Length: 209
Image (cartoon, rainbow, N blue to C red; front, side, top):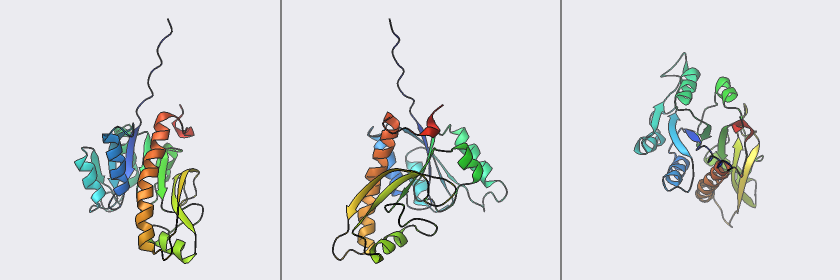
């Protein structure tokens, strides 16, 4: 008799956020409803007042404020130790305003994802975050915008693209109206992309043993 194949391991997630964390909430909700077959483990923020930390606490997962003020001499090592303590498989950046340290990027090479509120490679790079992105899109007269999920490397928004979703700009579009549309798109795209990773439809080299 042939042996039954083992079900795939449920991947453990860490989240890095600096602000409200609505993308974090979308993932937490999807995991709670079994739409997403992954296991949230910990939220890390450089901002003690980030509502993302409260979202993590309400979900019953570890929530930590780590910054150069709390750990002036060993910040990256403290973050890395926390990730290892939670046996994290994937890191998801959901509005994190700091670069990850080299040791973390090396240890989790190919396993750090970011969601960017535009269609990379355009409208990305240092300083392109939040409303600034949508202001640039509208100012450029672009006909479409969207969201991009990509792997993270040592530079801003330059890692390999995993998925994108597009929306048209309406007549009279403002940066604020575009931001609201793209944020709703981000929520869906991020959950869909993570579920493709969970199911094996989208393979990450960094997860292969």
